[in-house]
Length: 347
Image 1: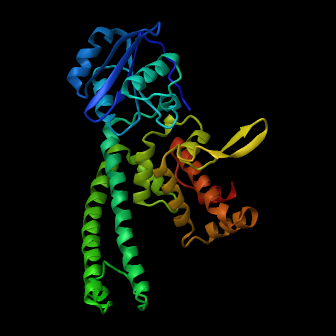
Image 2 (image 1 turned 60 degrees about the vertical axis):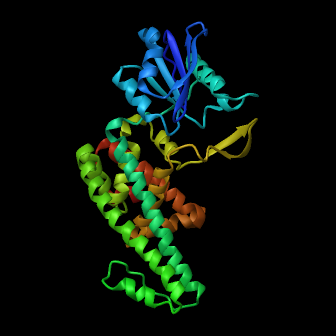
């Protein structure tokens, strides 16, 4: 957890919503110099903070509406702090809770140096990262439709069908596999949506690949050298990390990627784990997928996994492998070196 501890003359805490925002500005003594509700737009905000622009820092809780405010502060050369929503317990712990109280608490945390920071992703790559996430969402939706077709085959106890959608005429074969006309219509609706998703995903792949080569071509090609990380996983990892230098230690990167568990301890006693939702879920998914792909048609990797299974059990083996892959990716990007299978398996 990182805190913002730099001192300023004025501290601005904002409880931000889609159409409105409650702004609270404190001076160095902790006195309220501005506390008002206003429209969430650049002009009213800049007008309100104009008397305090000399040495002002702005903080807001990390919710989906922060993009425009971060870009505005960057344009106006105003320090901007993004508070980590899951760490900001002081906002949610009071007896009464409303926008006015929350904005005052955010400003107070900022002034006291106790506001936990989240990463302010730069605007240059932010839109492409969101597009990459949307692409993954479409892939999951397509997988749900394919799963529904497989479940329907089992539902009617029909022979197993090889679902190869890219083969010409496969759609007609799949529909004809079901004797009931209503079931055929059900499957046809699934296939039409699968066709649409597949076409759109292909277009997105080409667009994002072009962007990735312009943003950070070296990192993109280094990631693709890893056995099990293809173009798509490389894109996800590249855009979720942005810059590997923002993680001073490999432990910080593993924690951010949800590859380690954090134990809860008190008086020498362990009480389970905490912080399961803190970190980047997209990186967790990417490294878990990379662990599965690493084992495909890779006898040396499968032998290594068997060693992990015999020592830790089948349930933990893949998690340990995903953690090892995450650490390897960190050092590959940090040192700008391609993947070395022999070194990976011997370490």
